[in-house]
Length: 124
Image 1 (cartoon, rainbow, N blue to C red):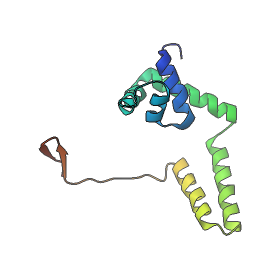
Image 2: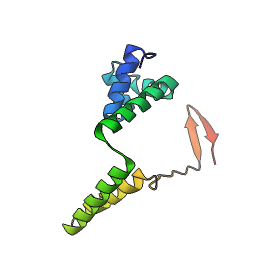
Image 3: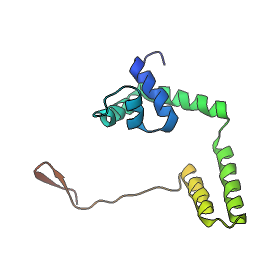
């Protein structure tokens, strides 16, 4: 992470812990008041994205985690939950599998007005 400032390096380290940008910014020393905006700004920077990708690759190698290993774990968890008659746990494992493979996508449709200050902007 040679091109990053000390605060940016701290943000990357903290973000890799839990993926929560706002909390990572706060833990890295950014103001609580502006943490959300700082996080958004930092996550849009190419050098920060590259540092995060490198960190995620290191974590993955260190823990030997792959899509295939996670898939196998979730399938095993789901089977065990079903065998133990724990349907909510089985559903959770199934949902995790769907998310892992990009099949659980939340879509939000908005039709109507967005109020910006005192003015209406028609979006529909």
